[in-house]
Image (tube, rainbow, N blue to C red):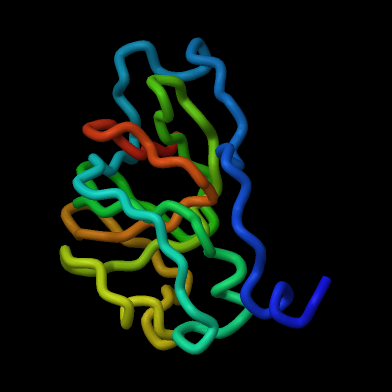
Length: 144
């Protein structure tokens, strides 16, 4: 591994990093205790100068979703379920950042990364997922 690969990471694989979830293991009525409807989904690739080399490498080419939490709360490190191609996929929420609409590069500065606090119902948030594919538009990010 070269110095630049170490500092800036290599491109993420083209497939989701999450594992498929059996649909029968999910609530049949679709009523989850924690949910965030996806309003916006983008791929992020912050520079090492913005948020540090370690963080930039960890989130490079990952998907960040924005929405207002409809029910429950989300926390950094939660295991969540996203829908990709209509199928549920389990992934880690790398970070949950309380924020207003409008992705900005400065959102990823060290001072704005979450401190591990819950973002609860009624608040807007970005959830940075360990996914390298975009979840379905109009679907929810849910947590059991």
